[in-house]
Length: 169
Image 1 (cartoon, rainbow, N blue to C red):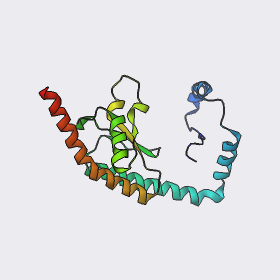
Image 2: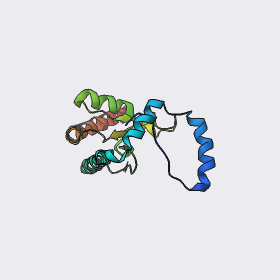
Image 3: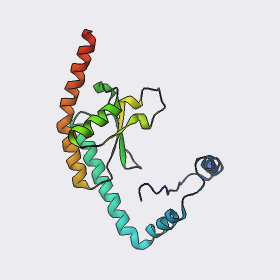
Image 4: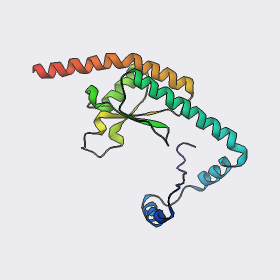
């Protein structure tokens, strides 16, 4: 039910008042249709369907993390409760995550979300970070990671050439 904005939190009882106060500032309520859909989705009869999604996400998460490791990308938050991985590419010289994401999409048809969408403006962190989702079909995730891996080395070479050109100026 991605995007339906339905969720819950399990927390220690002593935090419930603080959590409720914070939630009052973040949302009013989920739409009635989303609430009804969530209720239907959480019936005992849907458990096999939900377990299949969890298993697929686990497989996809492992697939993405292993592909990133093979590319030398190890500075990644592995996502223990979400369906995306947040990656820091700063050590490779990435300083414009929006440009990287646009170039990747244009050149090989793989989409990443720029980190600037998730970081405090001006902090510099978002410019070197990207988010990659693994909630799709496993074959699609695998194909996307293969495209990314094939593209990555050439992109790093372009970054290096651009950096060398700047240093000469």
